Length: 304
Image (cartoon, rainbow, N blue to C red; front, top):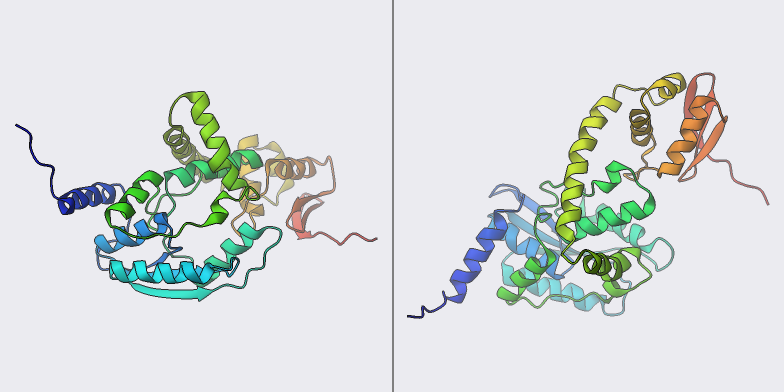
């Protein structure tokens, strides 16, 4: 005899329980700020944090980059009201132009604070790892984002956050910039990942995310070993095992959370060996050698 499907509320509760079992949210009762674009990932973050018993403030940052950005802010406000959480909208002054993604991210970080929770998923993790590979990053970059309370949805899939919003009957924002091929992440998401899935004949996101997890474990162990090196001691760098020398330099030269690329690290190692007296490492910085010591200084402006 056929059995009737469970009521919609029971299906929702079961789905939320399953999702929460894979989240790394703070404990119930803790006050949290959630970065809240109004899109499905951030809406799912707010919904799950509220269901987990956190005291949620959903903060929407309006960059003012699109004529209809005020519509997204109002939509985010309605979602927050529907989910029963506190809402706040902040205005960011970000002009269109070069490095737009990085500048918008920095503006959000400033307004949200370093401890804000974000709705990054396993799909975002795979994209981040592939972007790091395209930049020539080492294991630290390929390890992607660290799963912790600030990124509690990294074990969830984007399809799951969308489904949760559907079950909650949330009208979420659809940001057209997510399809803009100017931004490399969008091309990785919309072109590269589908192509690799077609070549592999399977969903590659779990594979890439798993590789990132393995690299993160190895990276942490090697970082502990590299921490014993003085990155300004040229002689020590020159004789230490190459993987540890590279790591010591990467830690020293990381600027505002962004490590130098592998080519810059190799140039600095050449300076440490005495093959050169100095080199540029990006970000307007130069490494120079004096005696057996390396020092970091500003790159002098070019004339002409």
